[in-house]
Amino acid sequence: MTSQLIQNAADATTDRTDTERFPYEGDRSGYSLPTATARGVLRPTDTSEAIGAAGSLDCPACDSETTNGAGLFACTDCSWEGTLR
Image 1 (tube, rainbow, N blue to C red):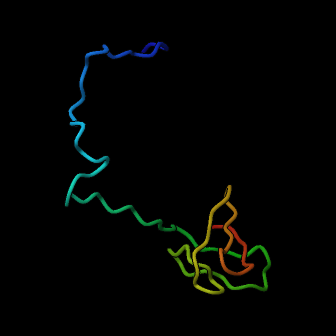
Image 2: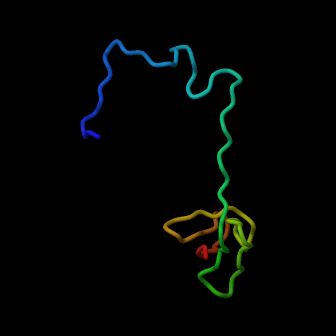
């Protein structure tokens, strides 16, 4: 492997024609995005709050979506916070 960039010739072409729309043309559809799954249970940082269902990343308090930031999960709608254990 080399650390230098490989440069294409100025007259080189790609497989895609200039008339195609990127990334999909016409009625071609793409692949569905994978849904996140958990191999544990969301546990709250405050022990008096709700515990999540096994295999779910939904908020245990309000069933809304949670976001993961460096291992700390937080609800996008309420103030629930916790970790996946």
